[in-house]
Amino acid sequence: MAATHSQAFESWYANCPGLKVIVPSNPADAKGLLKSAIRDDDPVIFMESEQMYGDKGEVPEGEYTIPIGVADIKREGKDVTIVSFGKIIKEAYKAADELEKEGISCEIIDLRTVKPLDYEAIVKSVKKTNRLVVLEEAWPFGNVATEITYHIQANAFDYLDAPIVKINTADTPAPYSPVLLEEWLPNHEDVIKAVKKVLYK
Image 1 (cartoon, one colour):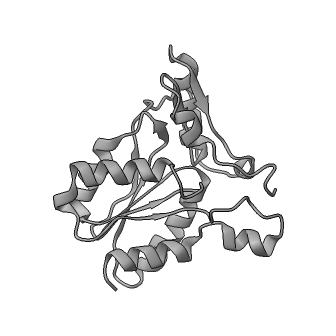
Image 2 (image 1 turned 120 degrees about the vertical axis):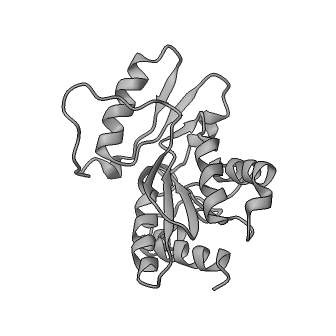
Image 3 (image 1 turned 90 degrees about the vertical axis):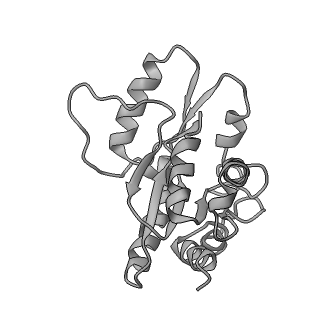
């Protein structure tokens, strides 16, 4: 969609005091979080990618809500923590499947809510795996991954066995060319490289 349509505003909105920012990655979470957003007394911004409108998945019937500000461990693991949100988290799943074949166990945390951020869930996971990779579809400067990186080094530094690696888009406007766009966006190969980097492999 190129530069006029491809932006990552999650961190922009999260920078506004009082705003809550939700970014679901699947249909079930979208339903539960949207119902919670509607009922919340504070202003809530519900971010969604039109590229996910065709996604299919099981959705609970009837009354179903998910608390705002609570991350979800989508995959249990012991070697490295991967934190992500929104549609780009699919690349983390692909990477985890590939890495599992090599005996590397990845724990994947879906933030679901960017503001408020579930710091506790990330810290708890890092204390278990001792390594952290943050995957975000946003430019490298001043984003959600940067905030997470700061918080972990400030509150779980002694548990880290390697420097944190964050994966973002290239620091350019989104290109229109499909070939260039593929280079611009993070993918599962980038995640695999990052995981092996923090594992010193």
